[in-house]
Amino acid sequence: MTEAPREEWRRPGPTAEQRRNDLWIGLAVTGLAVFSLTLARSAGMFLLGPPPSGPEQLFWTVAVTLPLMWRRRWPVAILLVVSVAFIAAQARSAPETQLSSGALFSALYSVGAWSSDRRLARRLRIGVIVTMFVWLGISYTAVIDQIPPGTFSDAVGPVPPVLAAMVSGVLVNGLFFGFAYFFGETSWVAARREHELREQAEELRRSQAEARERAVLGERVRIARELHDVVAHHVSVMGVQASACRRVFDRDQDKARTALTAIEQSARTAVDELRRMLGVLRTSNGADAAPPAAGGVERIGELVERARVAGLTATLGVYGDAVALPESVSQAAYRVTQEAVTNTLKHSGAGLLDVRVRYLAREVEVDVTDDGRADGRTNTQGLGLIGMRERVTAHDGDLEAGPRAGGGWRVRARFPLASAAGPRHQPGDERLRTVDGEDRA
Image 1 (cartoon, rainbow, N blue to C red):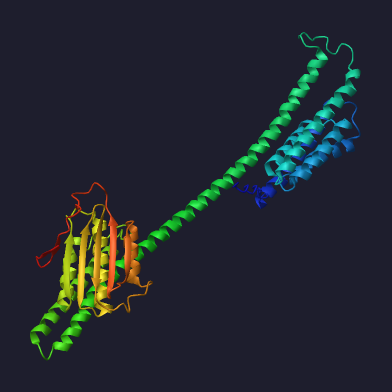
Image 2 (cartoon, rainbow, N blue to C red):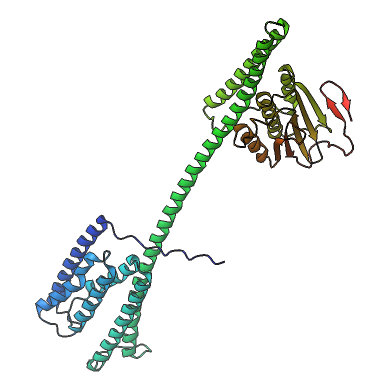
């Protein structure tokens, strides 16, 4: 599959200020050319032969130099006009040649530097240069027979004098036209590179702005996820306890008091967590500072205990030999478990909750199941499920969340671990340690 060719860059036309500068420069060059013509006439410097009348000399001098006022606006047309006027002036033996040659150089340069059609610019410049050398050859042929005898009487070099004069003229003209071509091309390339640098700088600014926006969005998502995990869990526990307190308030004061105590504790924990988050937001570098870890797998037992206080029959089991987990993995496992327990309290009407942590050979797994209803927990766009998936995906893990075949709901998250971390679970060691101190096979 071939890549599409990049569109050829076209240099923008001259600015208003550049056009005004060209106007004044063209007038100045024309004035200097007229002054040079006056000096040549006064000194009798008619090197090209008998000159035409004074008005015609003035006409050809102005015709070659005055078009430079528009050299950057219409470079191709100006080169054609100047080239034709230059050859015609020499054919008519106009004595002014210094400023006229400079005007031709400037016109050649301007086509190379400013013409938007690069193919036409190359062909036109080469065509004008070839035409000038053809005219030079014609001029040499016309005057070679008119050279007076004794003109080269003082010549001492090894090269025949006529040949030496012709080669010198060709060399000077070659350098003259070569520099005009080279500097014009160099100017156009420099303008194109400047344009590319500006585009790259603008693209870099856009990329930086997008990166900042992504960072802000990521920070907002992270804060929203933390707030959701903190508030939803504790408020759910408070709601369940408040409901239990209302049902038993008149019959069993002790149970009601226990429920109110749990509500108070959950409220205080929620407030502490919110203060922690707000403290991060108030710091001067809040966008760069990550909030301290709210907890890891070592605090999963607290989640189970809260569920038990809320009235569920809750158990926690740990399989395998515990290893030191990376802080981010430990916190992610805790948050996934917290969200799963919160959903059980809020939506399921469950009576049983089973939480298991498995340390396997290359991963750690948290598995939360209950015997409640699936209603209210099947929304795949819910913030809780989205948050769990984001946390698991961030660690290249897998998440399963859905109803169980035998009834109830299951959330199972697997987090891969580095192969060099700590002692590992050995196959066959399937002892299950529960929070009640009881071991099961």
